[in-house]
Amino acid sequence: MVRTFLTIKYLFLLFVCLWTQPVRAHDFVIRKTQDVNFLDFVFRSPHQRDSYEDLEVKIEKMWDDLLYYESNILIQIRKKIKIANLNKNNLRFNEYTILKVLQRKNIYFNNLFNYKQLQKYLLQQKKIKTHFNLIEIYSENKVTARLERVYSKEFLLFYNNLNQAEKVFLDYLKTACEGLFRAEYISKGYFSFLKKQKITIGRGSVLELGFRLCKARADFIFNLLPYAQKERISYPSLVALSRFQNGGSVFLSRNAYKQFILNDNIFLGRKGVIFITAKSTADKILHLYNTVKIERILGLQRGSLNSGIVKYSLPFSFNYLPDLPQNSTIGKNDFFKSGGFTAGNAPELIFTNVPKSDIESVEYMQ
Image 1: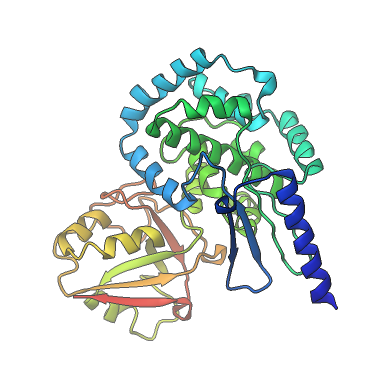
Image 2: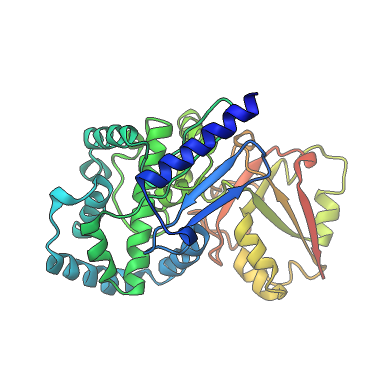
């Protein structure tokens, strides 16, 4: 009886979604996760075919070539904004926020994201059953329905006149802003925590944080800010943690694996401290099949992995006391640099007192 009721409820929700925001058949995707009680409805707008993962790859490339984007793409977009002469009264709050990011330099967070306007915006979205980029309606059995909103007509006309690189940049800003809105909606206090931060577009910025949180699990967002406040971690650490929401991996030589893993210790690492890189980055690194390149990316001394490479993966947990490594951190080498990235530009964190039993998988490479 209960299942029948829930099925009717989901069908009704789907009908409402299609009625309020019609899309073509090939723009509608239904995903079902491993959790049978979780359905994910995604409406893709015609102007934005890229998945979040595809956009993430493009944004990583943008950060690698940031000077070009700041000195070229950003300037071109500003010129096109003037030509478009957009009517602010016809724009949605998130679109108006994007324009402010594009048009102003060295602006602080509290001067850009007006909290009262955000509350009004979220209230309006509640009334029409949509929130920012993705709506999340939680029921007792954890059913979530998500709608991807499209740009307003006026903003879409402007968007369609951009070239591909400019569209990627604008999609990044859109995703980042809506990620920040989503974070504040799920766990009030993010805006207050970020208010003194400058708005920049590179790695480590407020916009990167928003981009990472846009598709993060709600429980990760809910727990991230309280953890930052409780442990008094820095703002850069908060951004760094958002890169590791899906877990991380550790690379070490076979000899080190035998010495530090295949022993009687309960916890991983030297005195319970391990250096870890993001799982998605680790998978890419392993596919290089080149020990010298891997050592360079991980910031290791040449020859460190000559005995063979072992990669083990871990989930993310706040119980591991994740934080950025410091100059005083146990186990750092001569190539260590602060800031959350290795000498080879791989994202890096430290976990503390991780039980060996938490290892999810182990991979070997000769």
